[in-house]
Image 1 (spheres, rainbow, N blue to C red):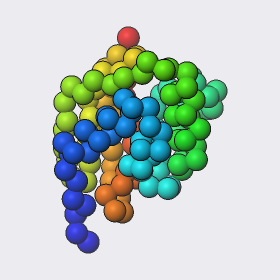
Image 2 (image 1 turned 120 degrees about the vertical axis):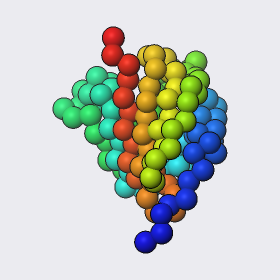
Image 3 (image 1 turned 180 degrees about the vertical axis):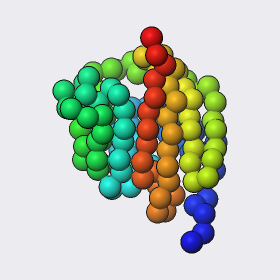
Image 4 (image 1 turned 90 degrees about the horizontal axis):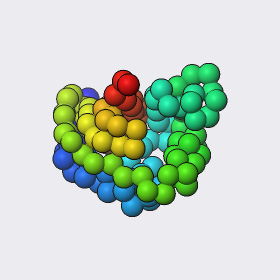
Length: 120
């Protein structure tokens, strides 16, 4: 199996631009249909027991709510880190600094994403 080819800077730019335009469909275009998203914010926002969402429909509902509720939401890219079939974006969001790691699968789409927030 060939390694997945990802240009970290291109991914970062496109992902960030989609978020800053509040274009939900452009954001979701980066993800596989069966994506898994992990974030400690999920239980706080949804009341769910675990901080895991599975599949694009769950992400669409979760992020759609966030984009509606935060009309001034903007992310500022601080750094891009790359690994084997992974990219980590370090950025400033409305809650402070975030490190989000993206694991890529088929067609260079995100199969899993893990968001970590600055403590405090």
